[in-house]
Amino acid sequence: SQVAIRRALCAALQLDEAELPFAGELIQVRPEEHAWEGAAERLLHNFGLSLLVPDRHYPAVAEWVDRTQLRGRLVYYRVRVGSVASAPATNPDALPRKLTIKPDSPFYGWIEQELSKRFDYVCCDTLEQFRRERQAVTRAGQVKSGNDRHEKDDRHRLDDRGRYVLGWSNDAKIAALERRARSLEKAMQAAAARIASEVISGWPEAPDSPLHSGPVAWA
Image (cartoon, rainbow, N blue to C red):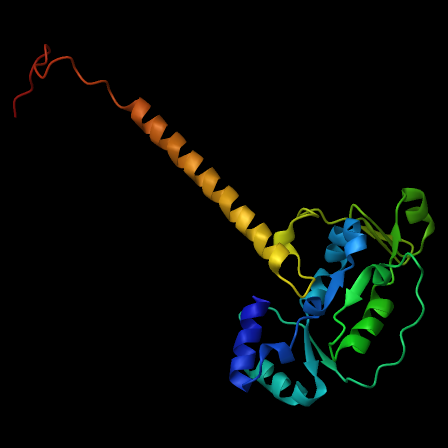
């Protein structure tokens, strides 16, 4: 996983993991916009799993990644902090307006620009508005890009917090994973009980007497 790759990378370069954050660890949906949380997670999932590499660590990171068999996929961005232009104005209903960036992060300006540049999707409350906008998203997770391309990926539930990657607090995700674990445990216990019941019901009934009335087979 990306988390394991980062752990190995930081251990090799003797860096604190906080120095190489995932983008998703620095972004979260504003509390008052929680209705759009699922759609935001779906749109930002891949970006949220991208590693942010400060310019000063870039040479060492690039070298380590190149010589290491990652046993997985890693996307990382070289971030030149301080060279970021001001973010362009966005539509009042645009997705970046529903997000907040960790205030004390040195990556604040870079993330703000990337969100405005790459995720300027209008959050539409109605399909009428969705059809009208050039780049848009609905609460149900349908995405429209470039006026013509449409996509809705329901391979995973929109409200599956176990897959959420945004937010600098993992409390909600941990709680969701714990609920899933409890649910799976109950399902396994129920399945085990059902199998045991079927096995027992399939056993032949014990005879009334240890002496069988039928013929005895001698060895």
